[in-house]
Picture 1 (cartoon, rainbow, N blue to C red):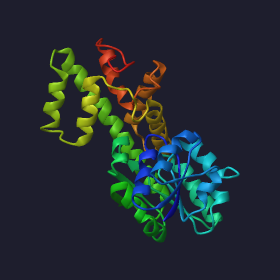
Picture 2: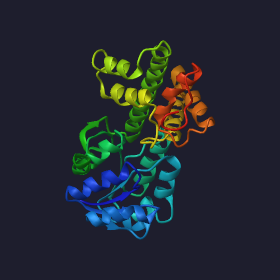
Picture 3: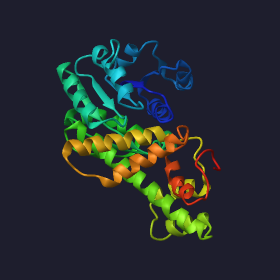
Picture 4: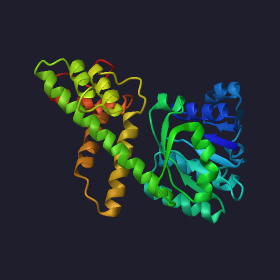
Length: 299
């Protein structure tokens, strides 16, 4: 496919590279031009302007938040104004349900297709094409996008014809991941203060009752107190919990623990944790227990 890729952060760079390796004709765009160089060397084309990345069969966006997506989509040289009729916008960012609904309507008004396809996986999974993709949209647009999904992930899960459903599923998943991180942090602080080796404790948990990868990944990060460099920065985690709460309010679904997580992220950020991985909320319990702070890799 002839595809544009917008957003070359820690996730996007690996994803765009996998599209190139799969044989797609990829045009990349990033606000920081230097981030395009490695992909150009791999075989991608660098877009001099945002509009130049919107001239193909599809354009993929992988951006940090609603504001970034809005700027790329609705700007004068953005996806809406620069893509042709019938083109597909595949949004792989974690965005609000409300923005997803706006994007559906805006693309329909421009005779374009919108597919929501947010992903589960950290940067190493993106680089290895091992992402889990949650996709929703019109069946024909999903079929057309399937070669892209095949190049980017190990499995694509389709959740219906309405794109906002995929965004809601992604937000609910990140809520669950953050819940695991907080619970692990509290449990590790509890046994750690009693003198139990926290690394051996994580090994015990992940080899018996909690063998899921999420427990191993985040349990080891918390036990190691290794929160830098951030694979998924704390402000993004805070943003996702806020978006989950906003969706819950719109649907009148109480989520008490999401409110707890919101305050935990706010506490982390108030103590200067902006550069830390979102798993650093798992160290707050240790700080509360008098076992240490949250800043730095070994705080």
